[in-house]
Image 1: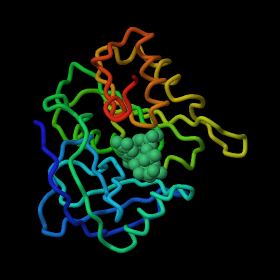
Image 2: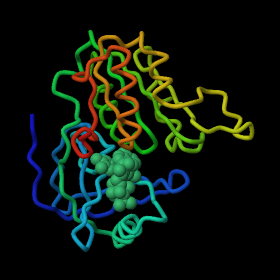
Image 3: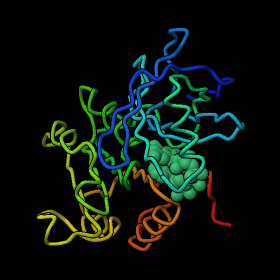
Length: 244
Ligand SMILES: Cc1cc2nc3c(=O)[nH]c(=O)nc-3n(C[C@H](O)[C@H](O)[C@H](O)COP(=O)(O)OP(=O)(O)OC[C@H]3O[C@@H](n4cnc5c(N)ncnc54)[C@H](O)[C@@H]3O)c2cc1C
């Protein structure tokens, strides 16, 4: 199902909560009480006063009335500062749904496949929506989540993947830059290296990647070098930052 983006609508900022350093959970409520229409994995745009659109993955899952976003505040970005001014005003203009990197219908119950979600930082938001939708199905594929952060504090909702725990959900947090002081006992290094180390667990998979173009293409190239097919790898980056 392809949902066509609507013209901008006003949403109330129902909650703005600091989750970790510079990462906020934002809850948006539609003004006219209409349930937002989107597929798990899609994103929306917040329209700033000057007409600039800022993209954010939808972290809530399909069917919920309120929208959840995970937004990183970037103190050096004028757009980010303007965005937080708009959020603090209590109302924002939203254009949605956007993006073609979403869970295709039927995949959430294709038990002969594996779903692999690879998220850098707030890329977790997009994966949360698809994972919660999949876990809500009576039968679902095995799910692998690789979440990367530069320090352990970067896992801004650390208990949520633990809450999802089941024999069919495999969670791998990976920290790229730890120090002894962090006390981190888990996996370390580049996110795509952890994925490649585990590649034999998901040979019949659909793979979703969220993060910067550099991170997404590095992961994509590493997967192709290990004989994964381009058709089984999905990311918004392929649409908004194509390689020329
Ligand atoms: C499709 C898409 C989804 C995004 N989702 C989020 C999100 O859920 N949470 C969030 O804090 N920011 C997200 N961003 C980045 C966010 O739009 C910008 O940080 C924000 O608009 C500030 O604008 P800017 O001009 O400083 O950054 P811009 O220069 O507009 O930032 C665009 C850059 O954002 C980076 N980016 C792409 N996806 C993500 C992501 N999921 N998380 C962090 N950075 C990303 C890429 O490196 C891209 O080059 C997303 C960006 C895109 C294109």
